[in-house]
Image (tube, helix red, strand yellow):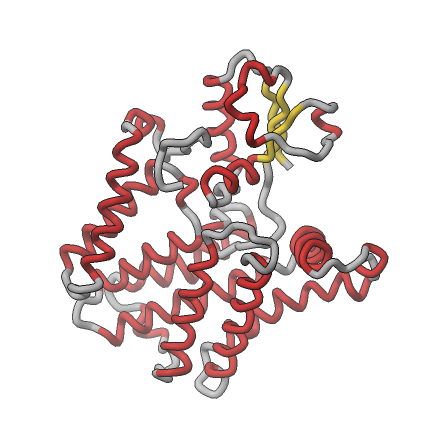
Length: 335
């Protein structure tokens, strides 16, 4: 997802950014990795911190599919280190606030029927645990899926209080271990780009809430200086996602089951032979037996990341495909 040498279209914030050559995407990736490496040795170098933040922001402007939850979180972690130089108290406060917000909104986002049907039943029960349909169809089994969202929500809330933060951190570590088992090589072997993120989240929880026993967050610290931006972006704006005014990925909406999907039906496969690798194997009625591509599977197959599931981004991709394969008779369905 971080280079442009691929068939999966980029979705820049501004159309004019499409004129930037693919090699620039790669250069930005290399510069980013170089900055990260140098920060391992010069962790307080503000020039490197600011440089890394600017590089990542520019890279994300070139393709909105890079606005992944882990990338977004990392950008703000870099940001809080940049604005709180020599202020470790403010750094840890904003850091904790981001972690708590992630779990609270992620848990809330799972309290919907889409999560029950898609994630709980189809992914966890049927695909992973191999539970037969006659059992998954029982009401008490079906609605038990809500417990997962409530678990994350309650554990995230537990990080707020001194008496519960350690047990809450342990509970969330267990959750991340389950996610690694579910999506890892021993499980579905899917979306492997999130494996390291889950490992990092485990490390954060251990270092902050278990090993060092940091104090409980005091909200007055988040109101200081530019930390107010963290409060707004992580505390307030994600709530707008529930009424359709803020992106899901920017609201910690991960595996919520309610993100829109896109299917591309192909009338003439001879006119887009390059895409043959990404054709689906199931039969979709809406495609009337024609070849088709599920956008999410295409992205996973080629880039190891799922696309940013926003309709505006799907429309950018649709426009690019129509321009590139005008004779293929492509039809697009959002659901």
